[in-house]
View 1 (spheres, rainbow, N blue to C red):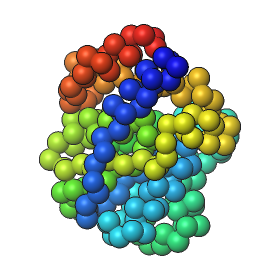
View 2: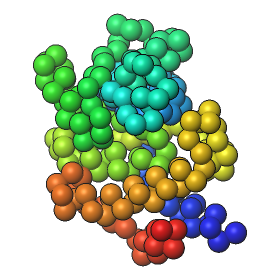
View 3: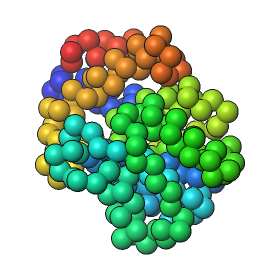
View 4: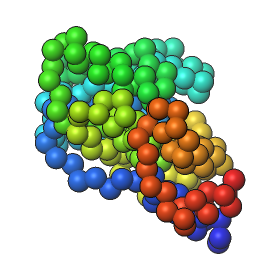
Amino acid sequence: MEKERLIKILWDYHHMNHKLENSDCIVVLGSHDTKVAQRGAEVFLEGYAPLIVFSGSLGKLTRKIWNVPEARVFSEIAADMGVPKSCMLIEDRSTNTGENVLFVKKLMEEKQIKVEKLIAVNKPYMERRTFATFKKQWPKVEVLVTSPQIGMKEYLEGYSEGMIDRDEIIKIMVGDLQRIKIYPELGFQIPQDIPKEVWDAYLKLL
């Protein structure tokens, strides 16, 4: 089906396919998607970093389902998976990706924790925008990105516990590509090359 082919082009483009390496910390960006918290915990438990930071307040969607910040919900999920709370930091004021980066950077400076390399964890369709935002807002840090290890078909079929449906995910994927295009001009992200095939798919899905 043509639409599925176009969606897969965007899905693949949003993935950075980074190979994880030992880092100074893991930064888990909050959202409705609790699989992101689980992925962050997995990366920590695999020994890639000694510290894990959860970042995020409440957004339009999460305000309807939780009464505590996303970062705190995510930290409890990680604790239940075996991540020691002594290895966690929480930043619970940020309301967008740019603030996630800036507020975590400030927190680390306040704690006098030196960060030269970090692993950022977000939703699958936000890997590239997360990378581009970190590189703009925290340029001296080497950034690797990862997300829940899940295929497009399973993701779109509603694995995220009914909080968000297939059509909404596709709209967000399309919107994130638009942000990748325009946000560098606004100073929010570094530029990313967008192949013609990807932009054509975006225009058709629009």
